[in-house]
Amino acid sequence: MDEIEPEPLRPEKQSGCVMIPHLDEREKAVLGSVVRAYVETAQPVGSKHVAERSGLGFSSATIRGLMSCLERKGLISQPHTSAGRVPTDRGYRAYVDRIAGPVALTRDEQEDVFHGVDRAAPSPEHLPGSLAGLLSRLSGQMGFASAPRVDDARFRCLLAAKEADGRVAFLLNLDSGLVRSALVETEEPVGVEDLARGTSELNLLFDGLSVARLRAILFGASWREALPATAVARLFRKAAEELFDVARDRGTSVSGLEELLTQPEFRRAEDLDSLAGLLREGGSIPSLFEGELSEEGVTLRIGAENERLELCRFSVLAARYRLGRYGGVMGVVGPTRMQYERGMAVVGFLRHVVETRIGSGRDS
Image 1 (cartoon, rainbow, N blue to C red):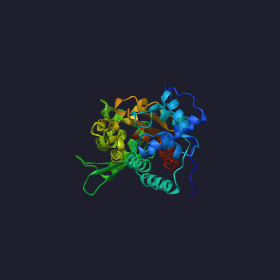
Image 2 (cartoon, rainbow, N blue to C red):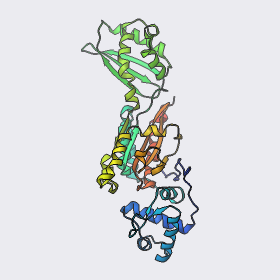
Image 3 (tube, rainbow, N blue to C red):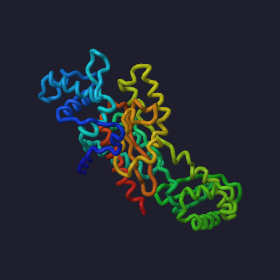
């Protein structure tokens, strides 16, 4: 299979209220060198390092002057008087918006994504965990993925079968391709013919209704009037507590905590506070992007661009993915000192593969 060409690095979340000053080509070259060196080493970058390893061909004196200009513009800072410079949040934003270019995953990495998504495809409920794991493994950061929200998905059909132990198994199929199953104990006699007749009646009653409407009917105060007065309908309502488990629909899978623990940013005890804050917010990260994510592209928030204080030392890359009528949010979280090109490539490619290999067959 041929490699997929990378899309241009155009994060949907642009600098917004963060004013990025004009940079000439020499300033861009030096800022790019400082960012890449700091991402690689996690050590302040001096002019000598830039002169020796960047290949820019500038003298140390010229580089020192350019770094002073970048510092005055708020794009790099000097953590200690004897240290080199480190990028600021504003500097990272300038790097992403003005300097960084697209990168592509290798053929082996693309195959890893294809296989991971294909393995998860038959069971959409397991998709968030698979996506979070892939995102973490390929980006080297913490990956997250929310479960598809199915409120807009519509009822397709209901099947029921009697198990050998007397319990009844219900299989619910939604138009989005999501399949749910539940086993319930029977408290009244139900035969095979009763199940066939009862499910046929429910299929006619629920045909084309959204999950949100089904929940309202099944758990509303007037459910007795809304449902047929049959044993099968009562059993289905009992099974619906599991079939329409809200927590299962809206959970978020997180993977790669160990990746964050290896980052130099969290070697000091006091730095663990921000990591603890991230873990408290990890499950709700997708909700922070509600209404902001477009149907295409990747949204990026860098450091203080995040609205929550717990995330101000992190960068978050997020993208919406859709499977037919429903979808979720996926992305990666890491320290602001991250490989942005790599993160954008991983999130963007994985979103594309999920939508084309799973979602494209679920629109009808």
